[in-house]
Length: 245
View (tube, rainbow, N blue to C red):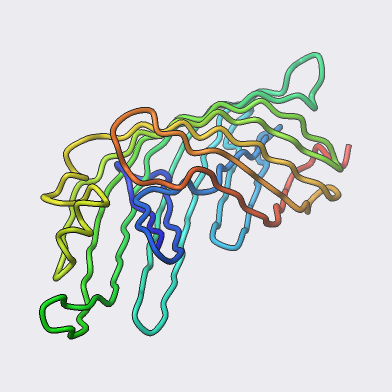
């Protein structure tokens, strides 16, 4: 059972599910648009993410990211969502417009729910236990990239500060909560800093490219169960003028 939890006001954190252990934080896909001109719009669609970035001036852009994941079977259910908003600066380097520097910062909100079947050790009866958590995060992500009509690549050393604001459980076993550092609202007492370096590669032609991304999730402080890495595959749609010149 993997879980993804949430963070401070509206940015990015994620939810991932597997089968036998609770993961309280998973990084969502990094939105690294590599914009080059005013009015350019990029949309990214993956199996779990919907992301957009718009250049509102020659050097200022805004981004919005959404993530959702759902898993369930007969005796297990887990779902979670996340939203992010950010604003940043971008600049093609004067010596070569294909080389781009950008830096974004923003906020995120998220929620996760998990329900699982357990067996009572005293009478052997089965019962359902569940928990729910809410949180938010702040993030900052500079990127260094290279963008052409056919190929893009970006390196993004992202950092996220995550704070869980509430946690509640219903009939969830105490020993399971202790093992996952969730007992007595432990998860809400500290903020968690993550380094999330990622590499993004896109290939295609002009307005549509296939994107692959891989990154690491590195815990920089307090103990929390988290996924060690993240990956995504999707399509990027680019509305711009520069690639027609």
